[in-house]
Image (cartoon, rainbow, N blue to C red):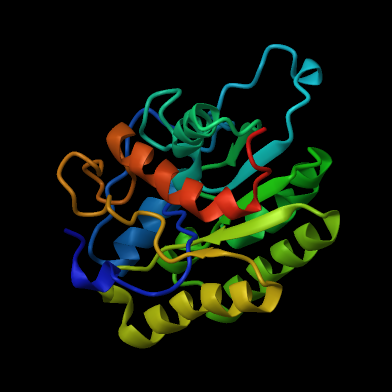
Length: 244
């Protein structure tokens, strides 16, 4: 079962790093070491992992973008085993006609996410699941900056007509109760401001469960990503067109 400090009532947006890589990066319980680990991990940035159809132009399904960092990208998992991959399978099995596009990149902070919003908008998505903030927290960045960047991401996505959902995470206790409380509150505040659904904990039912987390205790295994996909499916189902 997840440890007590991971049981929170807030939002979803992890990002202990970003995209897929061959080896997971362990996070030290020492905050200064954590920051160094995240920076090392950010250097392993790669491209989104969800395979797209050979001829995307021929695929007329509405696009659901999973927009985030390593937790979205599937860091440390094999190709085809990120949570967006499993989400595609879950949607298909339930008759929802959407094409899931994985826009997760390793090491991304909320600032990096803000820099990439234009690209996401160019995809003309019907739904966007926003998952950022973990790397900001692990680096001890100012809460005000994290909140401002995440606010700006939502502000740019909202007028596009895309339906938005927010997902988040918390931090190790090393960062202190005041910082963690403000970090978590960011998601709740912004979900309320933009009236978007919120997933309290992206790794719900995954963190601390045997076989669900990689040795770094930050990123999910393939089994864990399958559970994360179900968490996200529940989050976005009210935003989707019902199967015909």
